[in-house]
Length: 609
Ligand code: F6R
Image (cartoon, rainbow, N blue to C red; front, side, top):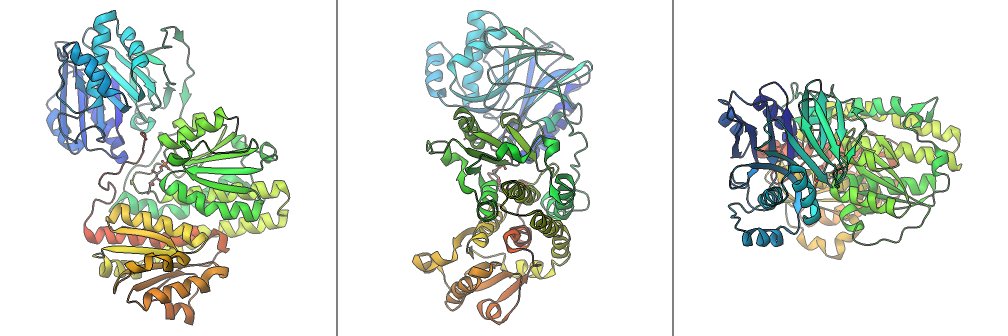
């Protein structure tokens, strides 16, 4: 989603802004822009719709300016046009603003400003915010007065970086419910909505908290409360400078990230186990903290929610703790009944998903323990939860998650084993056996990734499909949900996953000759039933692909194609069944010629509701 960058130092500002914006490209955007103080100390703005390369072309002649702001916009209010792109200007060109978030009462504020003579040219809430800042600045006299005042009037979420023409070597920042990071390196200061944008320049950062304001000079940053009282903030040193964001020989980041999975699985086992036992002690996480837990609530969106679906039956059967899985955007508005001894586990790759963060806040307000399973170091969620397990999958650039998904799964299994061992529902020997099983996943994934010809061929036959259904039961159903999401998000083929037993209760009416059905059968107690459902659709003309860890007569009878995956303990099968589904989605999208790493309308980090 939208990204903010800013620079104030002694180097030429434009290349730094462009380089920083490029680091945010993966998050998804549809227009970009920047503002710099020019040689006459006036603010100059350049914008373009489409890719950053288009903006880069427009600004390549700008060889002046050491202070400026930049933005990538993912359209919310109004189309992705140049006029709607940020930065936005006040009419007299004295204030320029970039903004992430949504101002919910922008219509009401716009009416107020119109009554005061302001004119509007774009459809955005950000133009309203810009003019509101201008209005209060003119009324009260100082930039900080204006920034304090808008916080009392604007309802919604925002991270804002502002330039005022009266202070040509200062940037101002303020935030509420949207991340904002300010980095420092010697005589240079950097602003970003995501530390990865400025990691190439510095790893020393401050995180703004809600309603804090910052005055950013060259290598000098002052922080203030909304009452304009100075505050001292702690600098954080981030370990993100060595993130490998190069595509290497891979055609797409998604493919590269799919192939990174065996290594990540292996590293995570090494990182979080010791002497045949799960060990999160380096993160300050011990079983004793969770010994009283009676219920677990897992929260996530999209693929992170699917991780929860796969983990729930494992937690319940192994650690014997009642577990519920919630879609974050539903949980936050349902005032759910959650017992006092509950643990809320928030799963998020980005650590910036607005709905999931809101659930963590809800949990904390209600006195519940919170645990994050997060990939992005230093992200907002990592600072909100009581404890956090990092998935350490490295920067994930493709919008469709792959390596972070399987890393989240593994962490959830390891955490379950820790709980079970602590509660005495498994023995030390069982713990050891489970870890041996999990440590073999890496090698099994490798085998899957070395044998992709069948999938490639199948994708070349079926890429024109109008719709695809996934069928499975229990854990296979949970895993199918992820396969279906992968396919629809990058190939734009309509796809749904159904609990196989539900098919006959309505959905089977959609099955026609050549409908593509992907069945997943890795669970002993349900495979025969699922195969029965696959035979039903096959006999109605569907083309059935079966992802299975065995090949036998029954499976042959039920399917047209079989994708054989390695065997593992069946509760961990999602780690292996998802690999062919990721690859199938990838190769189908490739055959269709889609923009795999940046699928239309999607953002990597969903920072608004
Ligand atoms: C799907 C995908 C999304 C994310 C979801 C949550 O491939 O990437 O469904 O899983 O937007 O994002 P995070 O994990 O960043 O909270």
